[in-house]
Image (cartoon, rainbow over all chains, first blue to last red; front, side, top):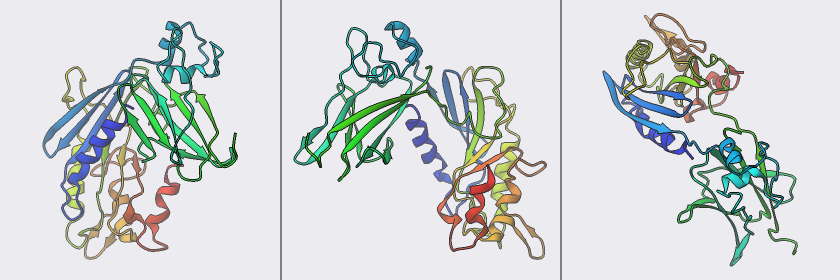
Length: 174
Length: 157
């Protein structure tokens, strides 16, 4: 998720404003354009550092065109039960369609491990529930969500007592 | 399927939304489909040394931010800094959340508070010129019935 890195940088950088030791003239300037973002730190008399963050180019519109899929990301173009938007998020293609993995029970702990494509321009969060009516959001950064590599996967560990979970993906370029 | 165990998942897709572009008070995009400039400061702690000259470091920083437009960005090809759409003050706006921290006070001279130097819609002169979007920090609420407590809630509706 491309917001995570600059957010971390921001918090580390503005740590210069320590209570009792306020350091004047420190701030961050951010410019966001279509394809990228520049975060620049100003310290006292000039720029102290900067980070250029490209945005993912693998957006839904490009994926849909490449895979002859509907522009409607909620549609299920290959009729496999997985909406197009989720297929895109999971890194599936027309030739290699997605299969949603089942929940796995490991000595009483339930996990749900989702393949994903890190290059996809998307944000996501999980929701968990005890009754399919009231849902509790779990966003990236929550300890229940872990990232696995080779291949890239996201693993949700259901909090104790939760029986159901779902994944919500918000895509750009859709 | 056994009751009492996780047994169902579902997935949901929805259209995208983008951070900051929808913030109230932000002007429409200019040269490109998306071109947004904003500033971020934090922990300005109005009131931490209000008997001394607590506002001085903040006012110095405000002057730098006010003079920033037109300065060349450090990255190649980024041009000059445009007028920022706003300033995000991510938290700890005041030190103890009292009315004097927030609105300043007079004691043989005026002492400004956070609201004086960081006006909601942007100010002029030595005040911050851009709209302010403050976060809710731990020192907003040192005790009940302090004015800083409810302030961020209704400020940007």
